[in-house]
Image (cartoon, rainbow, N blue to C red; front, side):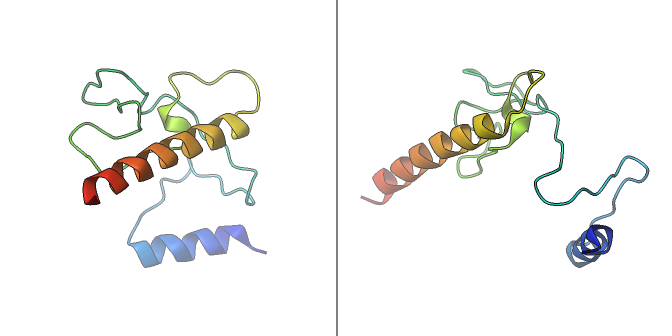
Length: 101
């Protein structure tokens, strides 16, 4: 499959512009994403998220990828990201149930 074509088509549909040459399209499961862009914090600042991955000022948006990790070790982080996403999703669902009850 031509992943570059797929990516260009999706960006066009979303109205997004890729930043070439910074962009490298990889097959699914082969991508790399640095952590630390929006690190988790007990008291989040403007460019941080709370412990549920919510950017400052948002209650129902949760960031659950590697951007919330304060730093990325020199190892595979896939399972760490999946575990954190599960933790955040379970807690967000619990909070959402409580708000409608």
